[in-house]
Length: 163
Image (cartoon, rainbow, N blue to C red):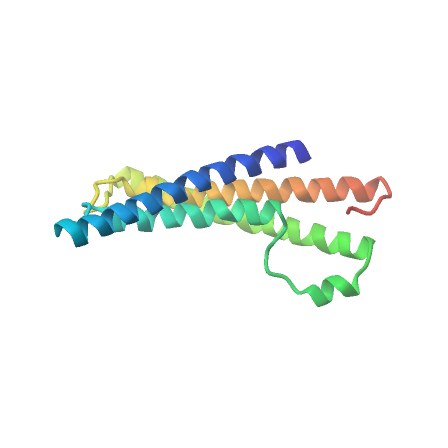
């Protein structure tokens, strides 16, 4: 399972890097066009905003894979060994359930937006594509959290304490 997690992490990290580079280039081009030529890149602000949505929700996958969510360290320190592993298992299960539920809700929104054909006024991009960032990010986060929970549970069932 850890190989699957590492693969998902690398894919998300590579995609996020490409999106971030594209955003920087677009932002620089937009600023240069605005200040040097008096013309902005059409739709650049919308594209940057939509890209930020994708960055945040795909970044959630990396945060989950690395277990870097905000948490109470004090509680973690009070529960050494198996207690800490059980806490991690509970958090992973709750995160998987919550993100799975939100992904299903997001799927309904993406389907509705696709059905009505709503597009961005400035760029003409289908809004279903923009909102798909939430769907994909939440669904993959749920998957990563579920895999981590399974890995922790398997380790505990074998009588070991996860690292």
